[in-house]
Image 1 (spheres, rainbow, N blue to C red):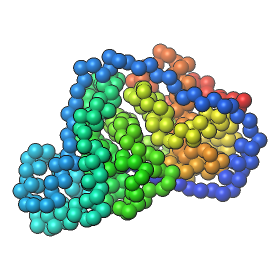
Image 2: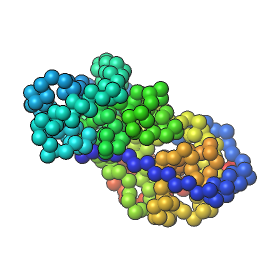
Image 3: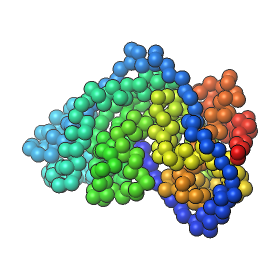
Image 4: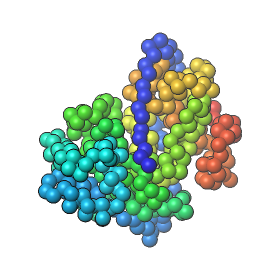
Length: 361
């Protein structure tokens, strides 16, 4: 099962003007504290292990030589993952003959930009022990909170951005196996656009290697929570993503909020200073109970800034407010376990019991 992120941005100039005027009239706090201080559990990573499978290295051997023999050897070693990579991630036609497949695959790997990409991935992530060490705490905390579905394997890929299928950063291969696309974490200096993968300037910060482990956490959470609430009103989706980030923070307690919600620190500082104004704007616009796609996407999806708000604002601001709301709900209801939180689909009950009413100072 391959998971993808779909990025949507709808700009509305009239709303932007209104929002700018609204914020010019609002005072704000100067707080730069994080959403939650989560206690670190040193025992969570003791006696924990997983298998790191460098499928990216094995697949790169298909670039030259006897393709059919190497293909057969890889299928014997890795099973269905090889065909999943070729036919689902790269989007090749499974009806191709063996000769056609050989020509196509070797042609892809020999293409100048892709060969360079493969070289950079191999260079950047040459040390498998270091990579495994960076992932180990996530596996430990996952086992702590989800003991019945441990992460047993992490498979690394160079997915070449999924070619026809669009950007694929990470996902689930089976209930105990995650994959991660290493080429998505080469850093801001790499020109992703030269491979035909359209990446906007505001998205480049998330290509830093420190976002690799949080992306794996997202893949694991998707296997538990699904991906979004299609057709649900904005407030429900805010709470849904608030629950997501609440759990993600517990899985990665040593990671800062920027890495949890995948937003620049400067944008989060603005949110913390403007929290009361953000909530006041959302309530005054009467959008919380709207389930119109254009309205929901405006506040939930990624974007350089939120339409109707200053350009210092981030996109997906509804997810950030939802996170604040869920943190307050859990603080107000200390008897509620994480499992109970995840099972509670009465999103508006969570809103009510949170008592969330941030003030503008």
